[in-house]
Length: 409
Image 1 (tube, helix red, strand yellow):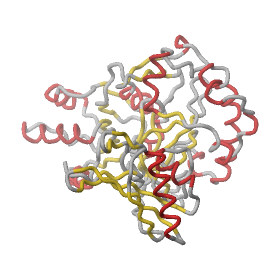
Image 2: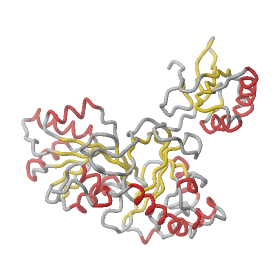
Image 3: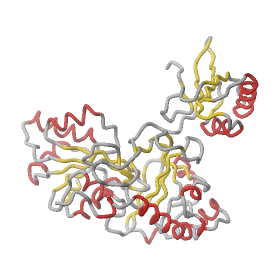
Image 4: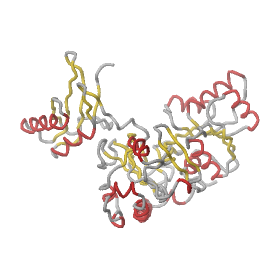
């Protein structure tokens, strides 16, 4: 039996990159048919966006901004060239954010993730992601059926009824949050019900600690992590290598410095930014607000696409200091004004019952004059006084944090 969904997963990375950026200009051209994208992108030459460097010059679209944008211009903030009537399903997620599902067989890129988790034709899948208004249930449903699985559209909750369904249909696969799988297995054991038919799982939308992974394995369930969002579907997924998350085909993923659209070096923690190649509802440089980092090299499983280290926190670190908000983009502005600085981290503490902040900045050749200049810039940008500490390169942790709020709760 094949270990890979198709040949695209194992192709030469250079071939994949060439294919993605061959398709991208046509997607941008389609996006420009929508007033919202024309306003955002301006007089751009779509044909010139054929590399990561060219893509990085375009503005990011922040997920956090979508609710207000869509409220002003419902339903899709004039970012979809196709009208709502051309989509197969229409959803809403918390925010609210409105999403459309195309009429394709696997519109959310979920089939590859499920296949990597061991799902195969003929499997019966208990899908406990929500089907009501949100796309979560349909994301996994469409992916499983694209593989050839039968799907039980269970949704979350109703544990006793779920155990009845398990007894009747004997599903061998599960899709849902890791917490609910744990609840089901515990409830079955407590009630003397047999849920041992479930042998494999794809889990997401919640933390999946090592302890819970090992607990599932001890009960005979091989569970694999999937990372996705309602606007795009599956972005990256775990494989049998258990070594990072492989990015889905047909997506361009960047890692950028929080508060900016500037790509960081591979291995450095930053915000996940995704560009989709869906011309009917394109998302160009869509900043998710989640932190991760690129892993070097290819996965031992043979898949050759970019790998992410997984979810590593939130990029939106906006913090209120002395009654005023300080944002990551302000710290990025300090860095732009002083190119001698590399990684920066604003540390917020309490001193003598007052808020205090210190900007720790890596610098290869620190000197007092530079420190004074950075101090003045920090005050000018944030409108708050703060100390500056110039530290050697490599001193600050590589965790994606631009603002660290260390005040006691």
